[in-house]
Structures are given as C-alpha cells and as structure tokens.
Length: 136
Length: 120
Image 1 (cartoon, helix red, strand yellow):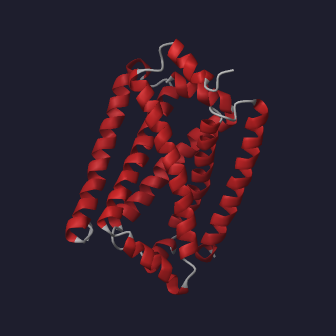
Image 2: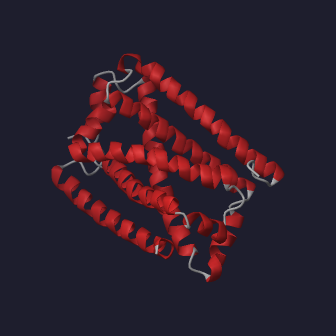
Image 3: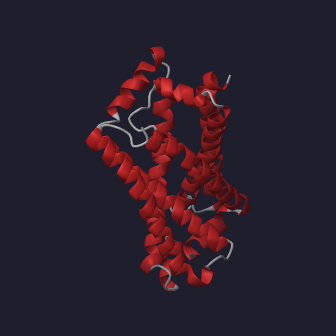
C-alpha cells in the first residue's frame, strides 16, 4: 500500500490543490516548528533558572536582546499567529460557521495575522532601533 | 478543509475534541503570555522581573494552563502528523500514542516541578 494514501486520495478528489493545500501545508510546518520550539523553550528556561540568583537565565535573556535573535523571535511570532488564526478558521469550519464563504473566512483570518504581526513587528523594530520597549 | 477532517477523524473523537479545547485555551493564554513577554517586557526580562510576574497567582495559572494545554496540543499534533507517514497501522499508532503519553506526562511533571519554587 502507498505510504501516503491520504495525499493520493486528495489529488484524486481535486482537493490537493490551490489555497487549501497551502493552508494545510503551512499549518503543518508551523505546527512542527512550534512543537520543537516549545520543547527547547521549556528545557532552556527551566534549567537556566537554577544558577545563583538566576545568573544563567539573565545572561541568556541579555543574549536574546541581540537584533538577529529579536528577528528570529519575530519569525516565531509569524508561526504562532498563522497557526492560531488558521486554527480559528478550522474551528469555525467545524461549527459550520462561514462554511459557504470559507475562502473569505480564510483571507479575513490572514488579514488578522498581518495586523497582529504589524503590532509585534513595530515593538520589535522599535526595540532594535532605540533599545527601549514601547510601553515605557 | 477535507484534509483536516480526514486527518482528525483518524485520530479519534476525544483527541479531536481535546485538540479544539486546548486550542482555545492556548489562544487566550498565549495572547496573555506574548503581550507580557514580547510587548510589555521586551528587553526587560530577567530573573527578578519574571519572579515579580510569577508572584501573582493569575500568572501561575496561565503558565500551568500553557504547560498542560501546550504539551497536549503539541504532542497530539505531532501524533496526527506522524500517523500520516510511518505510524499508519493501528498497532504502530497505538505504540506511538502510548509513547507520546509517557513523554507528555513526564514533561508535565517536570514542568510543574520546575515551576514549584514559584507555586509554593
């Protein structure tokens, strides 16, 4: 039996194409990225707190203020926002909400991703340029 | 749409339901988490400021929900992906499920233990 019967089935029914395919593929990739990030996140933060007065943790957090790491952080925000909003779309579809206008629902969700990303990007770039947060 | 429907159907009803419940919990708690770490706390995250935050019971609750819901959602999501590739038979899927539950419960126990100085 083929290793990927489901993909084959989707091709056969004409489902493995266009927007839905990309929505599914990006959902899967962002999900996998987040699983591995979550593991690293829990491990690194929990183990770095046990040094004297959290010195390892403080050094690490200082290192994370580097522009390159702030930009990587922003890339992670994209993965989180995409996964969250596409997830909202899937839950809406499960409830049958907007199922007749599912393409519009998808693009509205992507619009929300862009708007929320703009907020996070503004904070990140302000910090990279001025070295200060935006909330004081 | 169909891709997700077929995929979730294969995972079982309870895993489908809990994936949705944890998704909603994660959206709420992750929003709080990201606002306080990325937007409010950017550049000012260290042992002391994290300690101040964790002095509030609300943040402890958010962190524990993130830990539990995040672990379940992540490992169940990983399970759904892996069941599409090598763990396709019922027997392999069962072994995968058991292994992931052991990893998940160990991670949850470890996470609570690591948070314990702030809980107690």
